[in-house]
Length: 176
Ligand SMILES: Cc1cc2nc3c(=O)[nH]c(=O)nc-3n(C[C@H](O)[C@H](O)[C@H](O)COP(=O)(O)OP(=O)(O)OC[C@H]3O[C@@H](n4cnc5c(N)ncnc54)[C@H](O)[C@@H]3O)c2cc1C
Image (cartoon, rainbow, N blue to C red; front, side):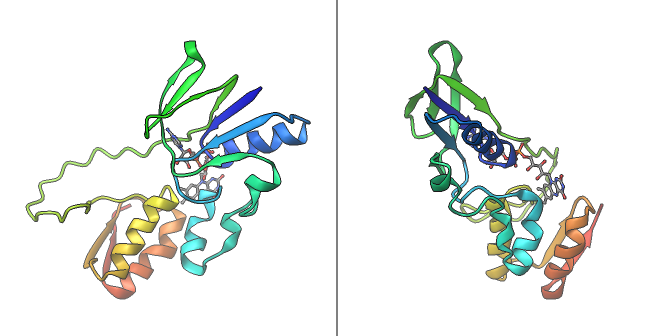
């Protein structure tokens, strides 16, 4: 029996852990679109401020310890329930007996841009702080000295920490 889980956020990881602690001994495959060990997005701010390892809340070695085949940086593009099959972005077909979809939520902001400045290839104007890969993109642009102005939409707890950090280098306006 093969259980496939899509998403290695807290929901997917807890599902895998629970299967193992409840005695399931067959194959578990965990797909994650991101190239990192399972992490807790709730600790993202602390991770970027202090490099806090607690972000890997189940340990970096979760996959080995729980005998889970973790397929990192592998997006699942489609599921064919009739065939019990999923298709990855790389075009691979993976069969399953049971499927757990733990893909979390997606950030959506209806941003209408009347921007005139051209973008470099690979650059984008709008970022989010919902995942580690998205937050790394913000950090990288700051590190390269490309951020002159940052407008933060949403004045949640995390930006009280992060916005001043951008602001120390340049200028930050929080619109939340
Ligand atoms: C900055 C921040 C702070 C937060 N603070 C708190 C807090 O203090 N307290 C609290 O309770 N909650 C907090 N949250 C919310 C909490 O992190 C989420 O509720 C929780 O992460 C949801 O877990 P999840 O596993 O359902 O989804 P997610 O954590 O979103 O995980 C889903 C995973 O699935 C992957 N995925 C999605 N689609 C695919 C696909 N097609 N193929 C492969 N992989 C895919 C994604 O890359 C992601 O890694 C915070 C969230 C953020 C971003």
